[in-house]
Image (cartoon, rainbow, N blue to C red; front, side):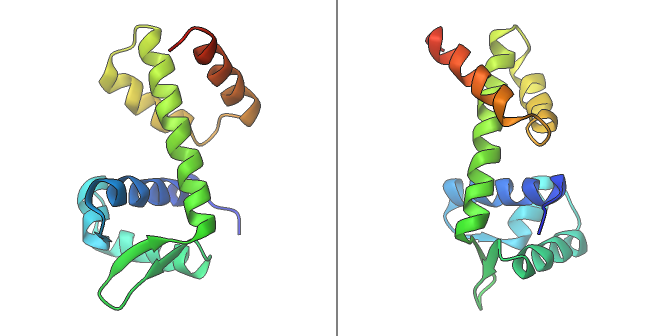
Length: 123
């Protein structure tokens, strides 16, 4: 199953929230993203059927191995792009927002070169 940008965003959000809170429920995702409960419920259902997400009987969401791999990749891209944009002089808020838009479309080759460049300059 090919994930769309929105699916990647949900997985990344669940990863970030789990790092911050430990236990993540759909309502946490709603509040974090500002989406409606029906929208999040539908996305969670799709991600569960796709094998990216599990939900326990109490409503706690956990990423499967494949969900975690995707979420980690997107989060790393987000952090790397944010850092690069800030280094270019973009404000932190704008850099984070722009990184969020770019992270889903940028190639692995470009990300690797940005990482290499940042590592080379000790950033």
